[in-house]
Amino acid sequence: MTARLAVAGTAAALVAAVLALALHGPDVEGWRHATRWTARVSASIFAVLFAATALSRLGGAGVAAALADRRGLGLGFAGAHLVHAASIAALFAALRERPATVALVGGGLAYALLLAMVATSTDTARRALGPWWKRLHLAGLWYVWLIFLQSYLGRAAEGGDRVAEGVFGVALMIGSAALRLLGGRIRRRASA
Image (cartoon, rainbow, N blue to C red):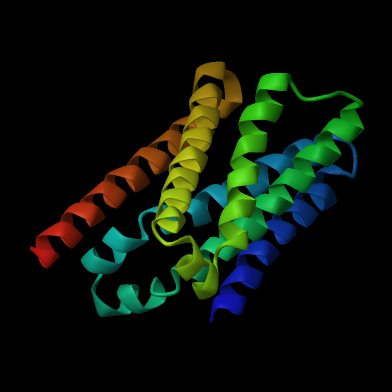
């Protein structure tokens, strides 16, 4: 199941990028759409992953079974988000520009944490890292969440045709965080 979820997440982002390029052309405009569409795929997978504990507890047995493979869901998100990174790189190559330093540092740290989480997504790594495994994955997930939130807040503040996307993205991130916190509360009550 883990491999299927990893492939599915990656494939969804690849399909989004290919469709964007097919509809808008393999130039700057096509790559702009590819970055937006792959971001939407990544954000959607991330929101489910981020809130998976609460969703599985609140949604009943069927939802719990569907969300049981958090590792696969995480690897699917990682694959989709790496397709998004490739789309960003292609966009800047088409623009013949360099991204702002703050975007490189902030986004680069998110990708570094994502790759560290992927590299430590095995049971062996979890045992070897002990309590540091949970710290790494917790910090990584919250940092990626913060980057998504900041990005969507920026879109909402831009005005124009991106406001609706920004507002939806902000709501998605805040909703997933609220569910995640609720899931933690449910878990603490169940173990008490």
